[in-house]
Image 1 (tube, one colour):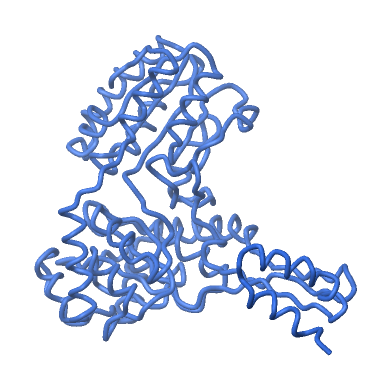
Image 2 (cartoon, rainbow, N blue to C red):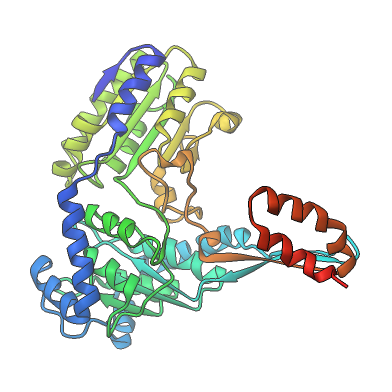
Length: 425
């Protein structure tokens, strides 16, 4: 891995170069055309893209419930146990996020409040590509169920040998109501606009490749989306008390996701930096997915040596990583210094994969620096909030003059008159 020993200011400049995003107008146009095709041709377009991109002929876009049940029964017992344990932990954590709304009746003659209503139908995108992710199904569907979403539909790319049993089993365990064999930008379009088979949803959640991310951005406004997910990333803060073997393994746990993934270590120890760099290379050669992880490590990742713990946190807050590990003694004491991170892992036994699968907090997280203003997926993403108010005549009369003053200041005479007519004799 590249090792930098620069000033904080210089490292912030270097970090910006690593995190910069560009828009590919060719992809934008391709995705736009796919969306329009799905709008106009529905299921026929979905089948055509399945043959073109996935090399699979799909007769029934919807997966039969019998096939889902069969997949659940067929998976190994240890996998079933792991999925059920993940469901329990994810449910336990996210149940605490549920909102109740409120009513304010403290002032006589005034009723105000907020009503929290679950979305009616949510679409879940599950990648197929280089890896199938049953864990993403659990992380996306369970908070939606807790929120009270009435219907969850899932799309995932068709496979030559059928959708992986682990994916279908996870859908059953998580409470997904229907599964459709359609992926890519066309799957996002189907969820956003609906087709003869795929129902239109209110919100689309779940990660995908650049075409999926672009499609989600383009359909936003027609439907809601969770976020525009970029490549996976991990940031680690560590000093010379940390284990370099552990750190290297954790860095590679994200590098193996995507050739564009980022793995960043920030430390105040030159000795640790060198040991981790050597250990990453050693472990990299042993990975089955080395061809994916190596370009991520060599082109998108780095180790930075800073002078102090304070500078380490300042730089990492600029990175705003999706996953942040704090491998420092008594790591909890540093939580107040964390400003920008999707999810934080404290100490050597809170390894990042714990969060990916079974720890409880969500693994659908803001990437590409968006942790500066975004949050992990949660129950709050599957509800909408409606405010309401009721005023008595006397309470409105107390405020009438203020309302008309503000309305006329803004040049909105009809607003003012809508108040005044209520008090004309």
